[in-house]
Image 1 (tube, rainbow, N blue to C red):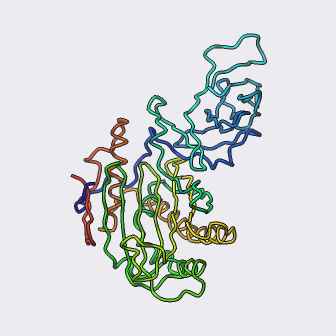
Image 2 (tube, rainbow, N blue to C red; image 1 turned 90 degrees about the vertical axis):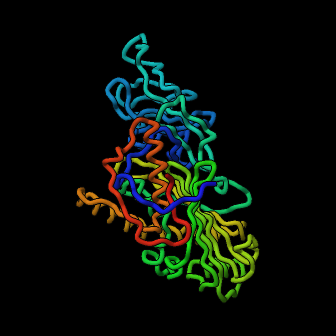
Image 3 (cartoon, rainbow, N blue to C red; image 1 turned 180 degrees about the horizontal axis):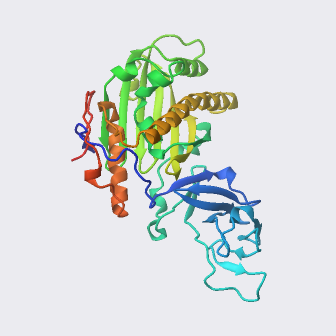
Length: 384
């Protein structure tokens, strides 16, 4: 693992999205063999559906003939789709197989068929070079379908750039101010944290708050597992970032002084906030999230309560992100500055910059503003 040094600069205010990457296009239950659905992923309008044997398919959502949306069409045969306008039919590879108005099929009649993988309750699509699509690079979100975890989630159609959501998740000190009635407490800003680049290229931000009062959200969860619980807790947040846009956050609290920082979480409650953000356009995102827990696995009541509770918390984030996007749009000549709490977000920008550089789309260094690190808590560093 690589220790990081204090951040000195940040790249452009908002980055474009890499194309050579896996993005969650939909929840698994959204993509069916009954009818196609439309969804734009990384600027590419897609028609998503399943073949008769259940395999997910992603095609360009524009017929070769007159660009009518295939997502408005019907599914035909074992794996095909029919354009709703003039009836052209395509197979799952994107090749036209039928032109009703003529006897022969023009061999150039094709639409793009994108690499698709179903994993962790999501349908993932690779919008870039198909020769580079490697399913082993899909971020680890095993808690989503592991029998050792239970939970559920939803999708936020966020009218903001995907990178604003990443910034939000990489610096959780905002909970003190945005989520004061549920998750916030002063120790979020006061506690030290570490930021590390791992050997696998992911980034980890770790923060512990020792011997603190549990905020309302966590007190409720402690009492779900330990009825009548009262007292102080040790609280943790361990953020795992996987480029370009997946963040899984190990969160929880345990009765203070019972060994949680040393690894014994038996007197606590542990959750994982699963987040994967798919850019739709430069100013809109599909934000897929779920909250998974490893206790009281058989309680649907707790699953529903947690999902609805987190939905309320994330609605507060969404309101802030929408307002931030509007402010960015209204101030195109202004730049971002970074604090020490942005160390994780700075790493995100560097890794995105590297991915874009590999695609020949890097943001030029002389177009990026310098920033200052105004404060330092713990190990906050960026790479050379």
